[in-house]
Image 1 (tube, helix red, strand yellow):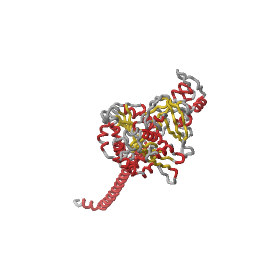
Image 2 (image 1 turned 90 degrees about the vertical axis):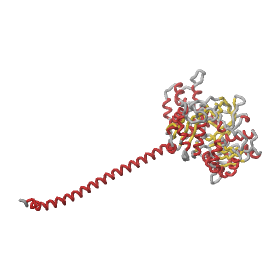
Image 3 (image 1 turned 135 degrees about the horizontal axis):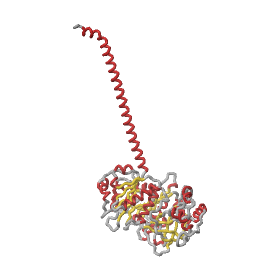
Image 4 (image 1 turned 60 degrees about the vertical axis):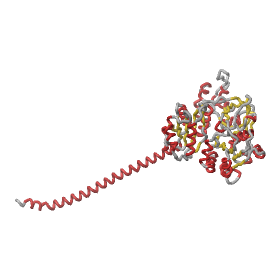
Length: 530
């Protein structure tokens, strides 16, 4: 029996051998399955990670795309006024259909400025040019950096008190820094003294241009004065462009004063025909009195924004006169550069007629160039525009503009001539010399008399290869450089979307960033663009 285990082992050796082979095979297969399972899990994890990364990149791209089409409204507020105006700004833009984000400067870093292509800054100044508390970190850190914001377009509304030495000091410091980062201004800084209604309306006007919304409602309706339309003539008969009209107006008040660079705010009205069509469509009586002064419903409608979409008409159906007047918005004001000086004894405007897509004339241009009667009343307010006033000293002046921008430049030339300042260069551009050379005889007379040193023009359609104002600026690079070295100021007036940025880039090429920064800081580089 003592040999039984050995015998038994011998008997079971084949079985054990088979079991060992089976175990090894099973182990190998199990190992293979585990490896396959691990590989599968790894693939799942890799695929999920890749998908997550792609989703993250897509989200970032979507965010970047959203931001590139959004407008950032940034504010720096000490007492709350700047924040309130920033939020009103955002609301106006949202109502116009734009995507807007609003942030305090304390919540903005370099990444935020890199993400947005357009930013509007509403900033106050505290003390003698200091930044508000919620902008201190932004000023001490970000504004000391050298980031590149060449993709960014910006506008600044600076709130301040002119009784202080450094009026709107933080706003100007912010503007200077943004220009050093190569950001491009949408329009020049708008300085607001003691919440001046006129400056705030100018800000709203720029918002309307930015939003391509000609019907953006005024936050505060101007207090107009009555003027009389005494002359109106078209200057560009046969032009490929829209009709341009030269208007002259006289005030009931004597000795009205303004400076070159100032703005005429116009209170437009609807035509009698448009009001009559409105009353007919809603079957309403325009002779009904709607005020204690006896104003009729039809008269009140002259200053209201009338509907031109079916949905708007439906909301007014069945309402009485007083409810309709409360429902309709007031017509927004319009701004035009003044083309004359007080010595001319009348105020002159140069207005291009505009139209809606459906053919209706523009609110302001339609009223002034088509509907207002000669000898009739025009509601007008002169707004002081200190940012575009003439240079304080007798220094050379380079004037650059296109289209109806010649209006503001003409006023500057008139003021210079009246003051005996004869070092004046004008660079002007339009479509065709034969049709669009506004005030041609006057300008050439000044040139012949030595009152205008240099007159250079760019008429884009007069040759096979189109030539624009910026091309003339480039061709006069050495002359412009010499003038600026001799203390010249540069004033630009006209289109904000094409001419002004192109001219700005050429001036950067000609003069360099340091000189541009210096002439800007000293008030020798000014723009009135729209």
